[in-house]
Image 1 (cartoon, rainbow, N blue to C red):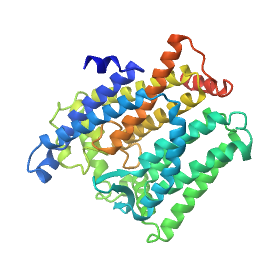
Image 2: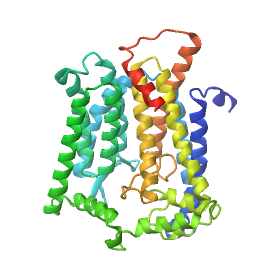
Image 3: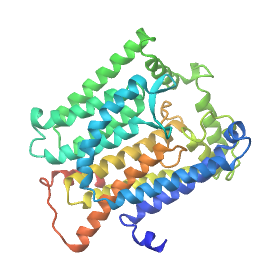
Image 4: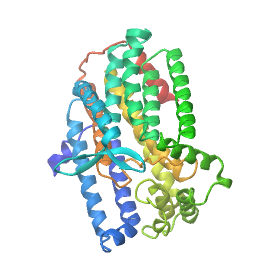
Amino acid sequence: MLAFVKNIKGDKVIWIVVIILCVVSLLAVYSSTGTLAYKKQHGNTEYYLLKHFMILAFGLGLMYITHLIKYTYYSRISQIGLYLTLPLLMITLFSGTNLNEANRWLTVPIINLTFQSSDVAKLFLIMYLARTLSKKQELVRDFKKGFLPVIIPVILVTILILPANFSTAAILFVTCMVLMFIGRISLKYMLSLVALGVVGIVLIFVLAKTFPTLFPRGTTWISRVDHFIHKEKADPDATYQIDQAKIAIVQGGLVGKSPGKSTQRNFLPHPYSDFIFAIIIEEYGLIGGTFLLFLYLILFFRVIRIASRCKGNFGSLMSIGIGFSLVFQAMINMAVAVDLFPVTGQTLPLVSMGGTSIWFTSISIGIILSVSRVSDIETKNGTEVEVLQDSGISENSQAIAAA
């Protein structure tokens, strides 16, 4: 055990934040799965606690292994991974497991392990984009040689994710835009891309409204946005989830009801995943919810610090991209729970109950820790590393840190 602890490298603050998030996750999942246990496990409330503990423990193991690998190896891994991801997304789109009128899941034969292919695609695309931007710094202002090689994989992946999971595609697209800005892609190209994206989304919504049977998920998106904008006119059945979440938040007050005493867990359809933040506020109050929010902000602050200290552009871009994606997803989940954003179905990273989503989150954080570990070694030894291009990226990273 001592040898294991001694071998843990990288940013210690991130390790502490991860451990705290895991503890919060265990407490929240144990409390919120009581009703589920009585329905499916004959009242064995410890079943989901032990299962979730094993998932988190395995996730920490993946994080530990991932952080030991030198981050530069992920450059080639991302290239291979992206080539595998595209057919994986196409298989999911046309023959994946259907859930809520969307093919989001793939099942691995023999072991019967189910996972969302978008989780794989998100990680590999961010790493691949970081690789491409770091290698094309001299050409980023050139449309044909710099912009197109960067944007084509982004468009392909987001389009393949979009029909089944709009929110994941949107989060990934925003993350890629942030990376392109830091990577010094021309602003006029980025604005043109945003304009095309807006036109495309409007077109999809119009088609979904006109031909609902052609694109059933589009109807779901429209209804969610419509119910969010016109709350006073919305059907109570359509706003049931968010209404129960708001009741939980109001009942929590400042200090909460105390652990395990949530009542809304019996009414919320997904209190252990999509709306776990509402249960946390009900049991731990506004203080507990604010504390959780600050944990994610601390995580992002440390990621920016790692990126600004990294001597290689690839490591800087990759860590910022992965860190931003995780924290942005957390902010969206929290915003939905407190009714500041339409329902999306995004989970709270490292806190919501889940298997492969927690594991991919753990791998993502492990990659960030790998960048931190190598940067610490280079700083300590005073060695010089090859910098792929000028300091434009680090300057933009420092500007974001200052903001």
